[in-house]
Image (cartoon, rainbow, N blue to C red; front, side, top):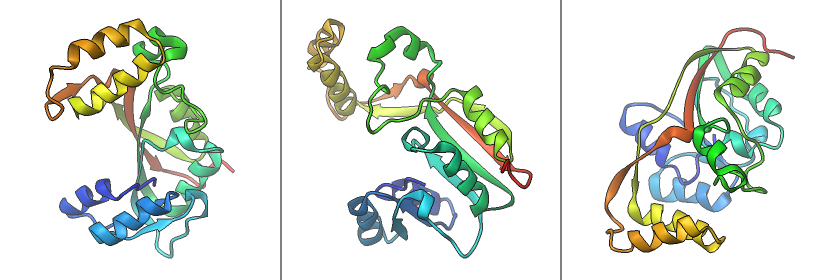
Length: 199
């Protein structure tokens, strides 16, 4: 779900999985099909249909964008086999970073980001829709400095003096250098379909 240009599906296929994707951005979906040879349907997730149910559905960096999250989670339920699982990654609104930066936290960015979650609130939603939580945790990620610097420059443009100082200091760091990303404000969760749903 939210397959974008198909790179997550490409990685899953390299590990032996077979899968399809759905992505509302038609240009991204076209890239996945034409450049990677991966079947990605260009449509809102809520309109996506499949003749065959799925064993696993990944929802990576998507929960924040749903207009009606419960409708989306109920649709996930309908698309899964009995006992199927959903893997979610999203930002943690109750993280230390979110509390420290307040209104300046990077995920407070409507209109593209509409929902903000914590492990507790996301777990409650999935539970109401017939899922049981299997596990949660924080991802380990690496980020290229070029991407990190672009994010900091964006904050600097908004007038943050701290971001301006950091941006100036990072100018000498190579853009291609990969560094660990502190995923303190990210979390992942795995949910298993267990019942007839909460409808």
